[in-house]
Image (cartoon, rainbow, N blue to C red; front, top):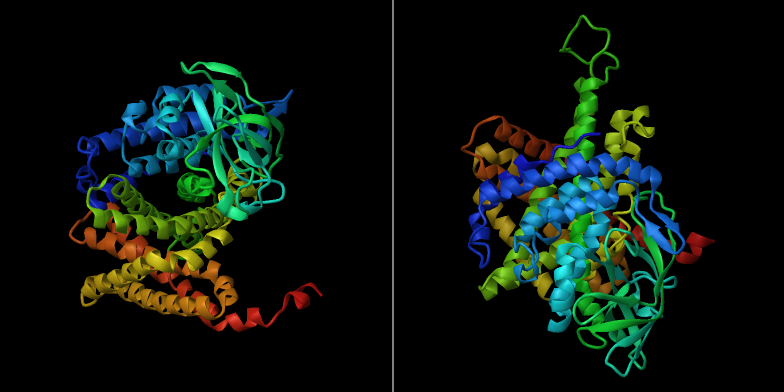
Length: 591
């Protein structure tokens, strides 16, 4: 398996579409320039393809090993992680006060895509640490931040997120883990957490568990959840490691994919924990990390779609099978490379057009995260916050679904060779399968979009966001050079706006029907807004020539003609199919 980081496309989106000046005008990013970004992306691509991709298959075959109460990572992981932290990848967007580089989230997201493409199991050992760092930096006391964060940025300490319990997953209000106050201001944490990614391993000296629990006497449900930092090893006042805390690994899961990543069951047996933020406000703090992770999971799907596409494209050029329709590349040969078969071209372009469009959406979201975090313009910050809130469930769900559909299509292009171990395609399918499930299933993301993001302040922003796109498309409606892009995008957007109104009405009159349409609505939203981004991308290059730009235009047209038409069927299904769903009761379904 091979991988070439899509640096040209990333740099194009940043420099020629978004405009890097939109980043460099933000406080703290004045020294960022195109050369710096390109150099970092090239190093990331080199590290991912030469170090991480080369240990990916062995990691899958060997798996993480649980023995004598501890987890060992597969061969090569410790060496790769040592190089990872020595190269500074753990501190890209971290605060310089903690030893970080203070670079934009947009750049961090590019790196996340690259690393996720080549070894998602390895990435999970670093990914949760990244989210944990930002949560602690956002919500913890100065004392905790000063004691723990430099080691996290250094990469010698890592972090986890401990939410799920045997009896509760998404509904965290059902948690049983208890926190009992100690006389010294700390808490005694008792309970069990399952499905803890990177809950134990041998890559770092210490592991910092972020645990939600309920303090004695706290209100029931989510209003009574508090958040605690529970280190594997207690930390002395001078930053040195102390005694082992009472948190232990009970087991690791035996999984379909991401087998090199240790997914742990942890027992907290009166472990010492430190309150993060306020009592009973833990879930609000935890959402800082959860939303970071949800976008990052979406980027995993994007990265795995890209590597699947690259390898399927190479294979299609090498594999000969049957004669292609005329004109054939060589009439003298008994068979042609399968890439000359129109169906293979269609499958490849379906992946590519969605990946490049989704990457534009990811770049736009990341830019708004940077605006949200750095801008001094209050109105711009408010809009950015709403945009990121609106896009987070869409990126998580749509991109991870794209990862599944893309890896399956790529596997299909390989035929029987995609089903066996040799080419690595079956591992991509298995590794990608978790993305629509963890960090909140895609169904949960869809309900979040419909029930929360279409209402209130974010809902008002969503309406304005769609209206702004409608105005933008109208401005280009009479441009014949763009007509084959603008017209289908405008029609899909009008349908989205009308369907949004229908869903909002149902939220008021028949919430069950609105929820029943949630996953379909999320896909409708994603496909349509990506079409709008495609129009804007092509407008930005209308006066440019060359192979790269010409192919951009052709891929955009393919998206409009081969992918976007699905939205018409989705809208029809949402509006006209609600009755069919409502007409079948649970008793009838189970009877």
